[in-house]
Image (cartoon, rainbow, N blue to C red; front, side, top):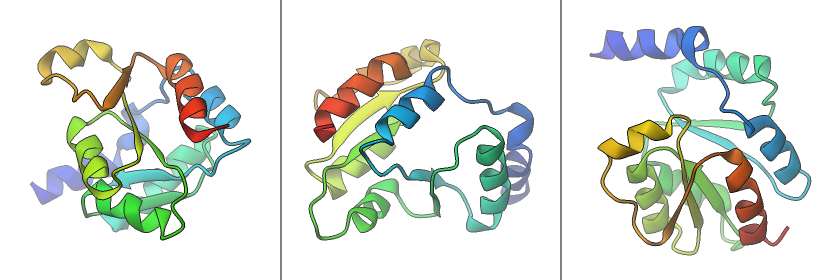
Length: 145
């Protein structure tokens, strides 16, 4: 399993592309908010992910974590109580964020919405969005931008 996961992360640039509208949405949001890309992967694969994100034009800070995303978000936020918007395609990561940062604004966004049929319903306090064009204005409002 470890070897398969390693190969998955090492070859991500061969198959992973940017979701439509993501670059524009992040650029707009980045004018008034700090954007940090958070990925759950072993740290040893960070350089491969960083190079791939740079090639896609996503030069935002990148944090890799092997812990649940919620505690990582809480550490990133710190004690200042800054508003947080968290976007993820995995409901379990959004629930983890809610459990660690109770007032975070949570957005469920999937690059392939046909996969939603295989997931349980999204909890009511998590906003499901179809794409980045729908997400960006909702995130901006949530963050007061």
